[in-house]
Every structure is written in structure tokens, then in C-alpha cells.
Image 1 (cartoon, one colour):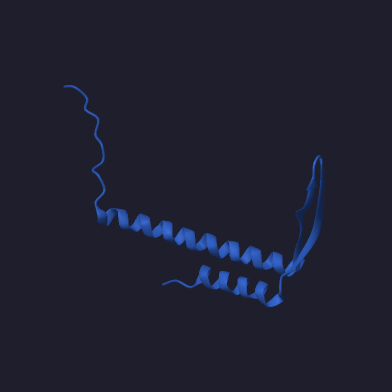
Image 2: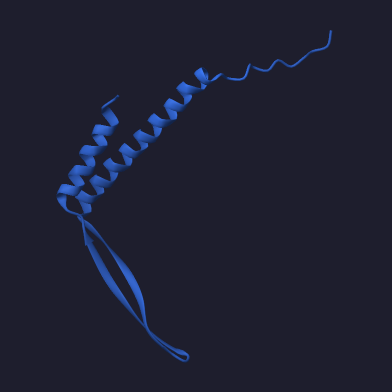
Length: 94
């Protein structure tokens, strides 16, 4: 008697639905964790600085540019709000 490989039956929509629900919950949990981490970083550092380069003039081979240092302050209420929103998303279930 020859050996025939046995494949599992194709999943029906009812069997696929719980897997899709697990993926949605994982996305919500990941968003919650990102909010909590971002809120904590906002509270710890209070802001961040970046450099913006603007090209003022280009005269032949000479290029004049200006580098501006910009500072963005993160308000305390935004950090706390992000943490609270992350905790709510993480622990409150439908």
C-alpha cells in the first residue's frame, strides 16, 4: 500500500476568525506598549532637540547654509496622558 501524505483540511471562516482576533489584540497591545514607553520617555527627558539645515544661497561653487537647532518640549500632561491611554488600552478589554 503506497503512503499518501495527509494534509489538514482548509480552515473555514469560523476557524480563521479567532486567529484574526488574536492579531488585532496583538496590535492593540503593541500600540499600548508604545504609548506607555513614549509617555515615560517624555516624562524623563522632557523634550528633544534636532538640527534643521536650510540652504540660504548657492553662488557658483560656494554654498551657504544655516544649521538651526530646534528644541521641542514635551508637556508633562502629554506624557501622563500617553501613559494613561496605554494602560487603558492594555488592561481594558471589550
